[in-house]
Image 1: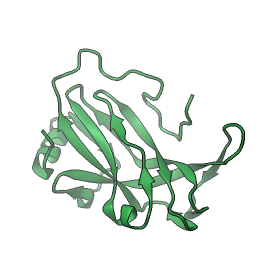
Image 2: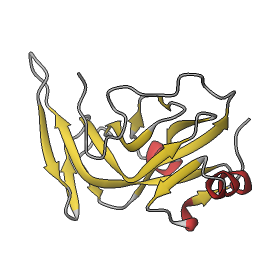
Image 3: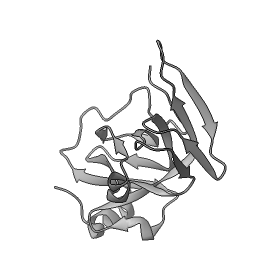
Length: 160
């Protein structure tokens, strides 16, 4: 079942969900908006994987139709009975952005690194802007909560 705003706040009070920093105005009827953090990596086209990391002081320019790995401002911690689904806020979808389906496993803790495809025109991404919407779902408590490579990650983490 998807958690409503009241259930999200209840999960936070109970310690099942932690978001830091937390801004109550980011809570929506069925989720929480997350903000662009201070680091991105532009994935460059070519014969092999190449990413150029950039600190986001105020804003960063992204080329048209490019892949960007972006860290969230918020760190998150999910209990063993809570799962998150990351979605793009509809404003950005309407502007031509897209993201890959992203599941935040039960038991995960850290900042998120999200892949974003920019629209077919150059864009400016600003630190602190609300780009993603996380929806939380109750699940049967996992007997083996997430403990993988990205656990307790607090900076941008590229793929293996």
